[in-house]
Image (cartoon, rainbow, N blue to C red; front, side):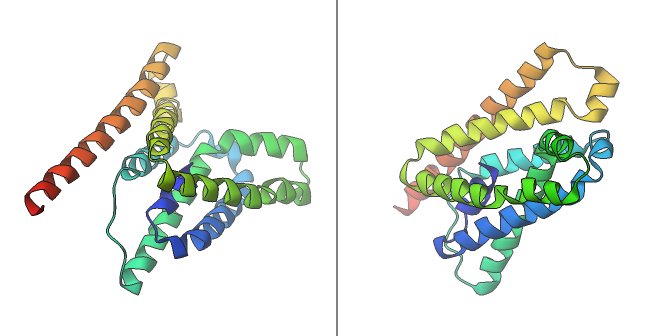
Length: 202
C-alpha cells in the first residue's frame, strides 16, 4: 500500500520504474537492516519518524498533483517517492526482518532469498493497487485509513514512547483510531479546498 500510494502521484509511464526501483531499494535496505535489527528495535524515535512519513503519504493520496511536465520535476518526484518507500518500509518491517532472520538461522544466502523473492510480489501487488486507485477512488480512502492506523500504531509503540510512558492497549487503540480518522479528515479537507479553489475559476 505504501509503495502504491507513493507511486500513484507519478506519471503512468514512470510508475513501473518507480515500483520496481522502490521494491528493490526497500529489499536492499531490509537486508542491510537485518544485520542491525535487534538495535533498530531499540532506536528511539525511529518508528515515530516512520509513522510521520506514512501519515504524510496517506494524506498525499488525496492530492491530485498537476502533470509533471519538465524532466527535472519528474526526476524529483521519482526520488521523493523512493525516499518515502524506503523509510516507511524499513520502519514498518522490523518484525518481519526478525521472523525471516530467525527462519534463516544465520544463513545469509537464505536471508537474501527470503527477502529477495518479495520483489516481484510487491511490484505486482503495488502496481495492481495503484491502477485500482485510479479506477476506483474508494480504494484511496480505504488505503489511507489503513495507513493512518498503521502510523498511529507505529508512533505509540516507538521505543521512546514505550520506555517513557508504557502505553496501555487502550492508548494504542486510541492512537490507531486517531491516525485513521485524522487522515480521512485531512483528505476530506484537501478535497474540499481543491473544489473551493476550482469554483471561482469555473
